[in-house]
Image 1: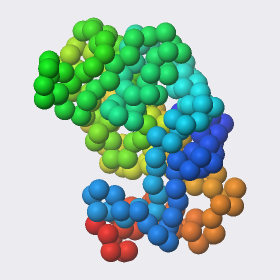
Image 2: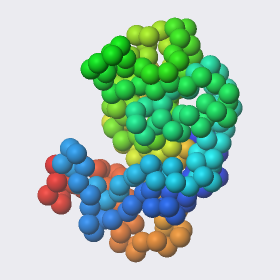
Image 3: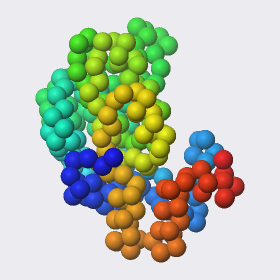
Image 4: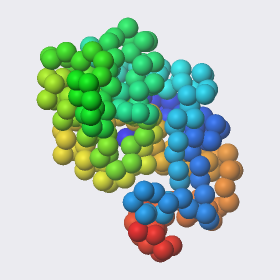
Length: 219
């Protein structure tokens, strides 16, 4: 879902388009790791190179937390793309920060959680992108096992897939995103970045990504 305010969601979408963090190519779709074809590809790591965009994202997360009265004493990033945004948010809030590896280290102490994550902490998890929600919700178990109570997951952008909705409902944790695919598509149309037929194709993908992919020879 888009949270914060509508204006923040539109501004984030506009900035992601401007810096090329989101690419729209319905005539030359991208292939995801699953083999599924997609007309959209999101690389929010590009935001790291734009200080004003980074600040907009951090302020957006703060607005979400204030709007929903999310109280926390720890900010946790997902490895790897969520780490820098978690660090900037933690800095703004003057809070400790940690991050969760996809798996425990194979050497040393074998940590999966790095940083300060004390038992009893109340945390927000910061993610850059939510697609199916599987990687985002995977960090919840190690945090719970460490005695950390996750208040919410905050993300910059979501494709808005049903799989993600189902994953977060199953996990029992709220997801708040600064922007999403419908907002971005509307903004791309407003800026006349694509032809009408391409906007229609992108809308069709959003309605049924699997059908859109299989019709074009993807998984």
